[in-house]
Image (cartoon, rainbow, N blue to C red):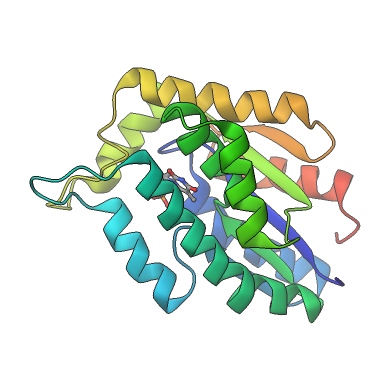
Length: 214
Ligand code: TMP
């Protein structure tokens, strides 16, 4: 495939969503290539509908970890087939706010599903689509949760993931750092506690060092 695929990952409130637009705009300017910004769960009409199920609470019924795995898998199948693969085949740069490394960490580490089972689902739904570079925005859990609380202050429904325990969020942070240690060539860890402008610069530096697009 001619395109380049990079993802922004990290725990709640790490700043990915702010960085998605900043990084996509900078890449458009500096690389001169078509840049597609997307998010998981979401990114296509069907996957955005699945996002609503995943993020909200169903009164009286908990979503099983296995159900989460299947629903995130369904989102990624839609994203890969209908958005990411066609964009990469046409030579675009795709930047996604989360992707399958979130499934490995949230469902495989924090929810305790066998990581090999999660990998098999990821491989099955993506059919060869894989990020060339994963940027992990690392922030202390307290900082991230404080930011997430400010962000969701205006919303009435509580986000299912934001309201998880501190140990869940610690497992998420450690999970991403462990993935980065395992594959240092494909992952870059950026300090997400810096100012938004500094975070953008650090991300662009990591892209410059590892991918020949800027
Ligand atoms: P966010 O887009 O606001 O970060 O919300 C997405 C939530 O879904 C976030 O809490 C992480 C979680 N998630 C998973 O548990 N597994 C996944 O595979 C993905 C993509 C996200």
